[in-house]
Every structure is written in structure tokens, then in C-alpha cells.
Image 1 (cartoon, protein in one colour):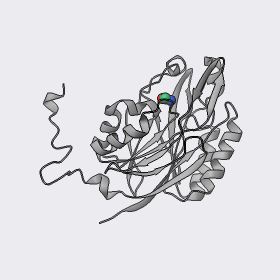
Image 2 (spheres, helix red, strand yellow):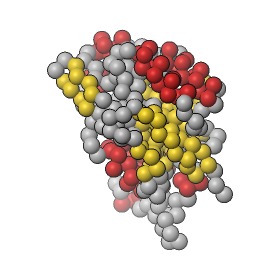
Image 3 (spheres, helix red, strand yellow):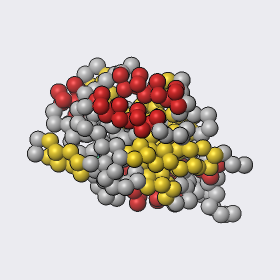
Image 4 (cartoon, protein in one colour):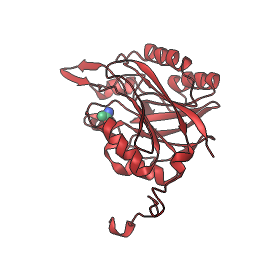
Length: 265
Ligand code: ACM
């Protein structure tokens, strides 16, 4: 049996603080995207290089209930698509680097980034919701945000929970992730959609260059689609979800049943 579906990333270069314009650009690109799952970058609506707690607070929104979730819900309904997108979540006085998961019927859930990178530790609380799998009908998705890739436990946990496709919202600055995702997907036999941002940000004497090269990676270590380094673009791949459900590497090796957990502690 084959279960075919389309997965897409949207690679963007958001303008810091210009929430309305950034959302508008994302919606324009989503309009042109024909896929069941569409992944947007980390903090796609605000930009990344925050310089103060107040600034982060001013750019945040409740999740669900904020303007970004509302706008993405409308376009998800129109396109009959699922959307995963990164934003700053505010809950009382706490901020999280979160991703929202939206179905054609509206808000489905959220993920709060567990492994915070660099100065994110000054602005955000570490994620406290764990790694959860969302059943979207045609497949099961798991969500990670950017630096989570560095910790093999992130994708392993989601794969063990049954995720077929890892939706990876990112603002990558190190040059390693795109190649590392080949191994991450191979060792878990899952698909991954890494939606990275492109461009540079220079604020308060700090400069970050984002690596672009968003990527869709298959369970057989194949790169199904890769974006340019400095572009804004849509990438789409047709994937057969059943490939992620077959964890047999050969007649003798099942990659999960062969795990020797008692030696891993
Ligand atoms: C990152 O986690 N944004 C590098």
C-alpha cells in the first residue's frame, strides 16, 4: 500500500518586528502552495534577534487566540491544509519559543521549544509540554523547533511515539543541521520538513546570518527538496507515508525492536 501526500516548507526572510507584513508575505506564499502540510520557520512573524525582554513581550501573543493563529487558521481552512509555524507565545508573564499546529478546522495544538539556543535563554522559558504527536488523518506529525535537532532524543522520542513526519521550524545559524537531518531521518526512518529562514539580522551590535537551505528529508536518507541559501521560496515534495511506518532495515533488523535500552542508561 502507498499513502501519498504533499509536504512543503516556506522559506522566508522576515523583517524584524514587522508582524503584519511578515504574516502577509507568509499568507501570499501559502496561497501558492499545494500541500497537505505546510511548515513555516521559527518566529516567522516577528524575526529572531531579540534585544530585550520587553521587546520579546511586545512581540508575543497568546496561543491560541492571537492574531497569527487566527490569520493562519483562515488560510488553512481555505487551502484545506495543516500549517506549523513558529511564534512567541505569551502565557501570563512567561514567554515561550513556540510552534502552533493548525488544521483546516482551526487550532490543533502547540509545541514549546525544549532546547533553547544561546540568548533565547534570557527571553524564553524552556518548553514544558514535551514532544507530542498530532494525528492529522493522513499521517502523524511531530514538531521540533530549530536547535532541538542538535539533541537526537527530540526526533527519537517523536519517532517512538509514532510520528511519520517531523515538522521542523527553524532559524538556523550553524552550518550542520541540513546534513545532520539525513542521519536523524535515517536513524528514525521518518520524514522531516525543515523550514528555515534566510537573510541576516543586525541589531544592537549583534549579527546573525541564517543559513536558508530549507530541506525535506526522507527516511531513506534522501534529500527530496532543498532550497537555496539566500532565497525566499516554497519547497514541496510528494511523500509516501508508509515508508516511515516500516522500521525494518532488512530481514533481521528492526530499528526500534533492536534497541538495547538496558545499555543506554
Ligand atoms: C536556533 O535554535 N534558532 C539556532
